[in-house]
Length: 365
Image (tube, rainbow, N blue to C red; front, side, top):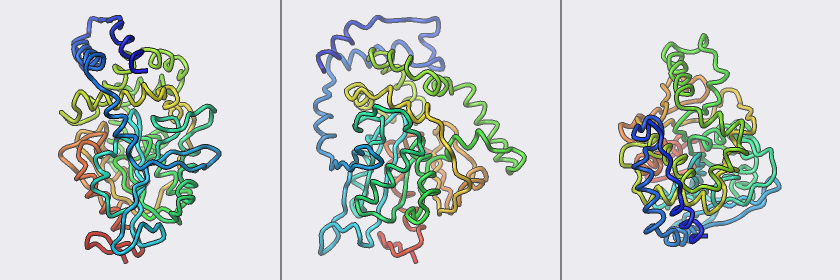
């Protein structure tokens, strides 16, 4: 597989446009050439593959499919891991165009909690997705059932992008299980039905800005949601095309310097070697049904370089925001870019959950 990839990369037909040096029109030719050369000549996927394989993976049958998950259990003082104890349980939900790798840097910071990171169906490291219908609503049910099978009846959900949308759906459908939410954005689908006349002035202004962003930057959404078959052929057959499609998002949606060249290539290679770029479009293609306002205690982390950070008033129209935390650094992949800040906010969400959890001197009553 690696030899085939390198052969394809070396035979890449370079394509230029009149805008090849304009980063506002997509990845530049020079940047792409730099990454493709490294991918073909010196990057070693096997090193990263072994590291990923060594993560604490488990698999559970849920919702008629096999759900693969990273499951890192805390070892409590004086006894082994016990899912029925008072140890907090946190579930980390990734988005697109990434994978469970989004959370690789926060795992070492969460050894006092039970941590579950599902490889969402259709994405890298998940079981192959072969049937239609895998909407965010169905994924939410699969994840909730899998958590129950692991023995977890109460947990904090954390995530952004598609993962944040799934978290909102689970919270609405299983309020008895979701103790609190930690999100980096409000589900973008809510902007499609929100009524500006019913929002606070700054929330209505945000809705207008979000609409402008979708018109200027959301072409990929239109293509992935309406013509997934066509796009999957191009990106699944051409590593150069795949790199161009993903790198543009990873670099433009994150803070400056968030990724080294090898880190970018690892995230891209995860899609290439698992053959999942086409199936990762499922949550764009399949229609989603969003819940009404969610009363679960929510901590919203707002990172300055995310693609369209929401004001508190907008989030409060849909969520029970108990803390709204703004960060000067970090972007769309905050758990990777700013793992310490991300974990601090996640701990705020754990502390906001009503119940008996105790953590790092913080007690919930």
